[in-house]
Image (tube, rainbow, N blue to C red; front, top):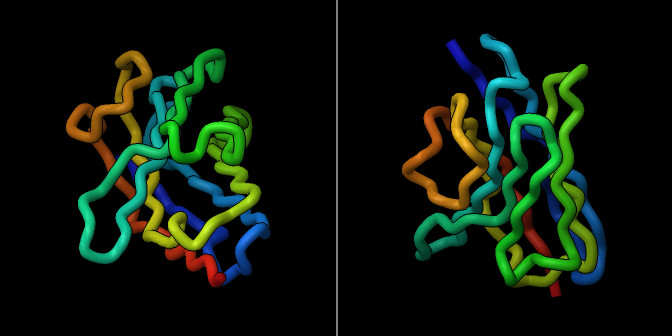
Length: 124
C-alpha cells in the first residue's frame, strides 16, 4: 500500500524559507507523479505544485511561481518543495499526493494517494 509522509513544516517569519519533504513508500516511486496541495483555514484545498514521474515536467500555481520549487529524488523516494520568500498567505496545511502512471496534473481528484499533511505558518 502506498504511504506518503510529509515533513519540514513549521513556523517562519515572512520572507523566510522552508523545505518540505514528501517521503513515499509501498510501491515503485518512479511510477507516480507527485503533487503538492495546501488548505488554509476556512478555505478549500488548492493546487501548489506538481512534478512528473521522471521529473522532467513541473507545474506551479500562479501564487507560488518564482518562489517555490518542486523537485524529486527517485533514488531516495522523496519529493521536495523548496519555499522561499514566504508570505502570511502561504499559511496552510500542505499535503503531498501521488498519481499512478498518469501524466502530471494539477487536478486534485486525479491523485490516488494522499499524505496526512504538515502545517506551515508564516508570521508577519
